[in-house]
Image (cartoon, rainbow, N blue to C red; front, side, top):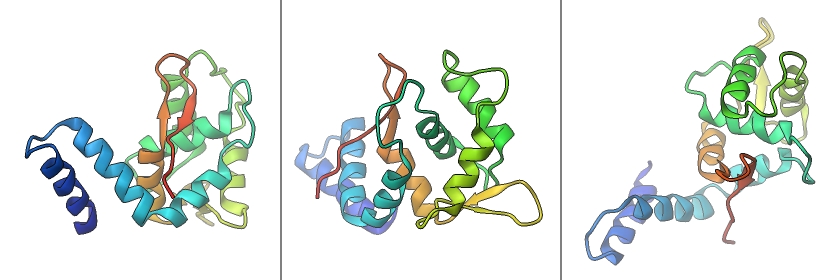
Length: 152
């Protein structure tokens, strides 16, 4: 978390009478996102499914990208994460992950860049990764990927 993010957390803890709770961190993250990552939020939002689909595979792919720790992203690794995180919607083959990754790299506001020498991709801006992690969550009751609200 950058110094501005730390400042938000400090204010939340101060508001809570100097008692830290996980909720303080969640609220500070949301504040920091709304102030510091507007552009990143816009890019991520532009890549989400525009309508509610049965599986919302694109949203699952973006969510799984946010859960990855390495710099290189490939279709096989994302597919494995989808199978672990969303087993009820995962197929054994041809989930279209490679095509989705390619689309995420060719739009007007790309989320990913393709490595010209391999089949791997990398995130365009590390802020996008942070934004995905704060912005998207898996709803425990429906197991669908959902977007947290955004204060303008």
